[in-house]
Length: 429
Image (cartoon, rainbow, N blue to C red; front, side):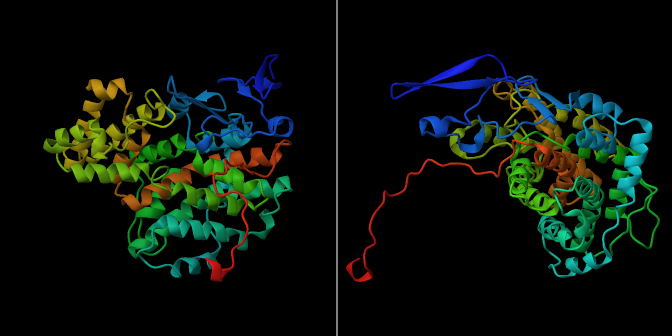
């Protein structure tokens, strides 16, 4: 807390609002006592100007295009680190030593298999079920199988639940994919890396040997790392809100997955790729650029600009490198869809309209291109996002549980319905 105090004048009275000083970012007005003292609420649709919690995990400066995990710039982590090392950082607050990373990696690796009875859950879904629908159900059902890690008041059980979900979400997502395409489930291989194992579970078949390509493995690891956490976004806030009631960790993460499913959140990269398919060929780009500039058209370019970043999305810079590497490896630079993407990218970075409005290509633009090139259907884009974000959700959930100031979430409202009125008997209506 700083020494500054904001003063609010209302109906002839003055109220002091303490000013809280963060490590980074703008000052925060403390309005916790405002309702009790002044009998007023604040109105903030979407909570875009409200800090709902204290957090030491992730910091975003949207004006300069900066993303920090526990203080470390995402660009440095993407260049020098791995997803599991970043998982350790997010969970425990510091980068691990070699021994700590080896221990953490082993603990995650040993938990990659799921309970064999969980296979029956998948058979209860239709074959054409969206993998996210399957994941919401199966992850929520984990509480029915792992009773020894549902007591949120036991630090050890919280730890076990965290490791289990980080380890098992890739297996569950891969099973959802295999089920949707009618192929047998592929069990995890402990000799592979986290990202390599996921690729193996998605693309291997029992009849043939599968070798993980290191460039695709690195690209997948980066996708997971870049999406690992992103401050108090919609799905993270959902996890915290569910957790504030004391719900078990599996239910909280299932709630986060359900929220992530929305096209305005986790489905953005799928929507971006569908837009590229709608445009179809490079010669049609001017038509769609004109539509994007015409506010009355109702059309908007997906994968450009960001709710938080008013500058270049720092994750997009890293993802662009991976996109170039993957497309070069697969030799599909001449794919019509990818040609459209490349030309759109060029225009967005040069056109005065997009530059002035800071509509730069974001991480969804490039991740969708990479996943398409790897052979994933668009229905798997959001499940991969869910795998990546799991560690962020769990880190935020654990932080919330340990927060002594935490209360059950209970937003207020600006009521605009009828005033109190008396019931009218049916025959008189």
